[in-house]
Image (cartoon, rainbow over all chains, first blue to last red; front, side, top):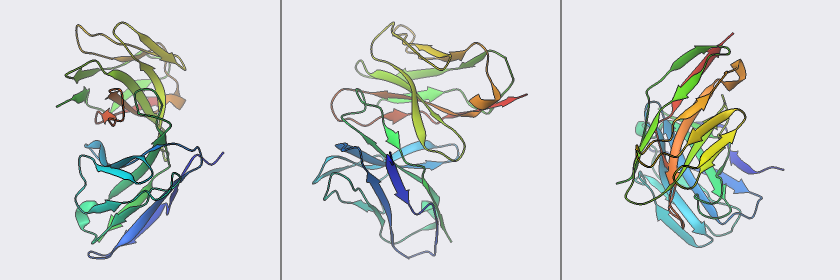
Length: 114
Length: 112
């Protein structure tokens, strides 16, 4: 079982470049989300989706875009990378809302912006 | 708004020591409470949960009791192992599609 797959595992960008972090899940989960993890800050929610065609902003959405055209995929786009976006990014999915269904996390993408 | 506060880490213990990681929450309603664990190089995974006051969640020797009167959900284990070394996150969630609210995490290192 693949679960939640994130690509790439590592990425280095220059300031101003754009890129897309990929996330795919094979569990037919409706709920998907993106978090960033920074030292001393824990996990902060960037964007989330409760189903195909529906997205919403989390705590720190600025500088990021998402779309959910299929149930399986939830890509995260950095429009113009900044050093402040250096972080580890995690995608997660769950069958229903987080109260009743555990989140399944990918193994993360470590992004460095120089 | 809703929030979760965990004890600052890192926590370093010898093998077979007793573990407590404190977690308190601020919430306007009656959320479910969770502990997630992150092993080195991996994403988070659910460790245990409790859905209402006085519930006790347990898994892999870890326990936590949902205390409404003290708004707490402290994680405990009677005898830690080196393999328990990880970052532990306390979190809360309401019903529906509201996202999890995470604490900042507590790093545990267990030495042999």
